Length: 98
Image 1: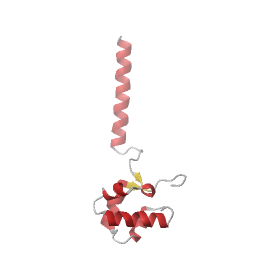
Image 2: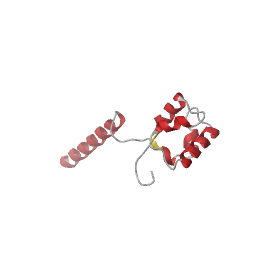
Image 3: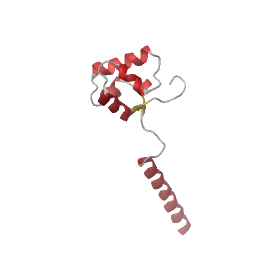
Image 4: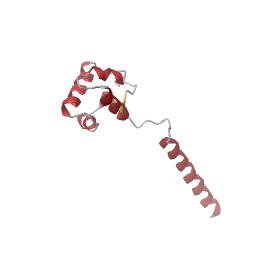
């Protein structure tokens, strides 16, 4: 019985440490892939309404994919503040078809 309790405590300790490392600068990213962004995801960003979200989606579609978030500064209405807000939620993720 003691051995089982010890194992449970060790597992819980490892899980807690893992979660703390993710919360404080772990390597796992919870940002969304900008190249696969939906209208709903884009409009959830401060400073982005339906018109700007549509413009971002058209810009990405016209370029197939973007390789750097800073490319979005070429979209009308996306200034430094809005771009920074986008960078908080999105990133360019590599992979097949982006």
